Length: 359
Image 1 (tube, rainbow, N blue to C red):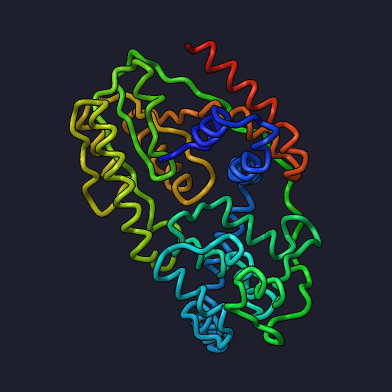
Image 2 (spheres, rainbow, N blue to C red):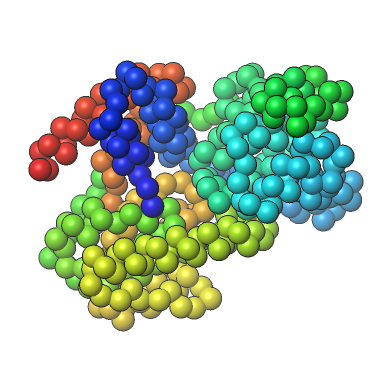
């Protein structure tokens, strides 16, 4: 709904790059995580496969199941951890410090698999993002930066919660890195694709990108607009009601904005199977191509692969449009963030040049 580019542009209209450098770096962390995972999609696939295996294991291992249920219900007896679990369930949000503390306690004190923790967050966080969530949990566990873990310390928690919590003696004093293979080598970044503005076109909105102005402004023959929702694909387990309600609100907001711009009603996404619904919509609208903002690695992208195949059966192409911001940024996510952040001035300069040319 709001782009990294918009946030950074708004800041730079009021501040210099040097004075706002730290804030802008924080915005770029999201871009970096998404680019890093885009270049290493097997990390996501391995995580998803492991989550499925662990959920099956919960059915077989009563001890693991009881331990996991206590953690997810906020009934561990560790006051701070339990409070954060309840806050997450009730509000769909946690402060960044609390997220790191929670993940560290989950992994190193409770000795629970990090994949189940990442799955728990993705089911409950309103801002749950496949890349930021998965890779941040890997970072805490010592898998992302090999050998470097994050240990939640009682003193740190007491200091930054202003004494609300002081879990002295309750937390692990050590954080041994979780075993796992090293990150795979980066693959080539996605290439921008073009769509034929002369063909009858449908516009598809996904919850990964509800800001399609750059597509509506392209001048193509867009006949119809619909949505593709993949919220329930975040996990094999049930996604929380606050997350589903948040996504509903996000789509409603996008409906209003796009309908005002498009001046036509948006086709409802009816039917139990969202892939079948989109195929039926495309055929009924008589489109030859469906354009959507590029969907980065995650559950929606997994579903889009199947959608691409189903549309192709009816000779309808699905065309992902890659944003300039991602096209310029993702190729630099080959190593750590320190190397990536050195490219930020060049990325911003290229974006400014592209905007000037377009104007």
